[in-house]
Image 1 (cartoon, rainbow, N blue to C red):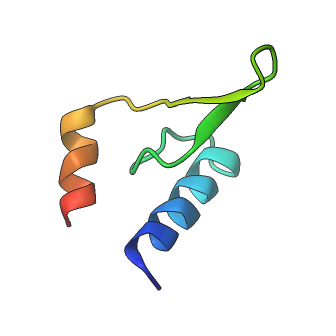
Image 2 (tube, one colour):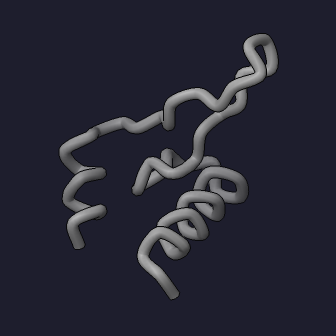
Image 3 (cartoon, helix red, strand yellow):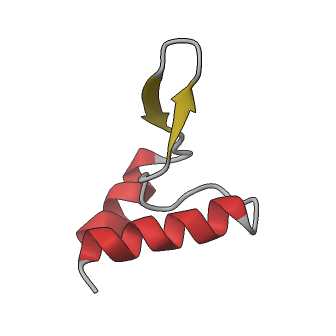
Length: 54
């Protein structure tokens, strides 16, 4: 599995089914008003970058 595919899969599982914050920052909420994807919600960018580097 490619790294980006794994990151998307992992983030989708923990955000949708476990209601936890995403790890890799791949899930972007869609803004229905502007009809565009928003920015990913990340708690700690430093921690996210550590996971991304791994």
